Image (cartoon, rainbow, N blue to C red):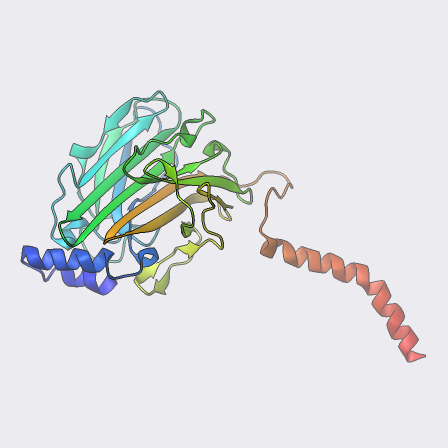
Length: 307
């Protein structure tokens, strides 16, 4: 996909653009395709201040990679739309505000790699930046991407609301993300058209997830060991403070694909409680304790052997 994106600038005809899009989303395995994603830059923006919503096709959760322009597309309101959703249900429409943008953190390409909409935050409480893309190439492919960034998280229940409607895949936290903490497991539900999606592979990334050279170019996404269950539920435990992202790419058959991402902030754990630490991180202390408890036994056996 990296190679195909870089070749895109050479295409001059509509047919070339269509061929490129099909290669981007149809040929690669679904889990390796680039996600349409809101790129989270900040976790809080005060009321009355401007907030930037940046979207890109990316396999790196913390930076933009490729824009519509690399597919020779100029997105209209049907192809790209977005909104800021406040806890009282009111919205700020972002659709007409999107403009070509060069993410200063994105180093995959030189120049335009994303779209950005800038809007003023109008209300207190949790805000959901929700964006959607629709790429429909008759006879070739249908791709729908839906992405959310939850910021200004407060304990108001807004982060747990489904806001995507009945036509997209959406990830919903089952607990308030204002409580998201490093080492504490969080349960999420994956929906497709409003119904739980079972057996989906879940990917994740955060600010410390290293960027590596993957099959589809640079990426920092890892796969959870377990897929979503029969109720669409999966568990993710943040292992790094700051921006965290969970994502799913669904292959629906008949050249139809649907992706969704959710980004949020996790805070450092306070005090000495471990919450829900991973088994791997707990292993070294356990080994130390085990060694200390066995030391007297080992010494005694050594003395007996010397006799």
